[in-house]
Image (tube, rainbow, N blue to C red; front, top):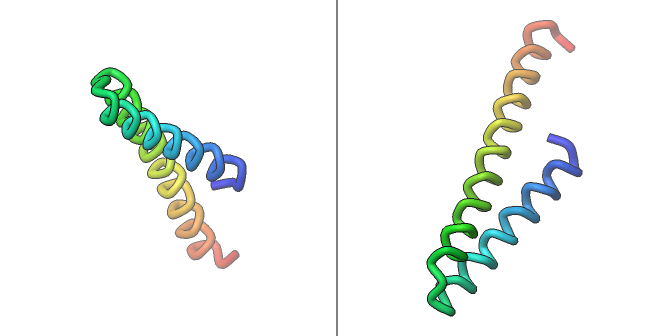
Length: 65
């Protein structure tokens, strides 16, 4: 995962946490749900990048790179 991707995912996660917190504080369930959705999207992207990295590591180990 590139540095830019990591930063983008972290920003999306933080934005989601902020939305969730504000939504909870003001009683706005829609905003709270949006925040949770943003966090979930970030987590899915990170998991996908982690799988790509693991596959690349296995490939490198097999080909002795």
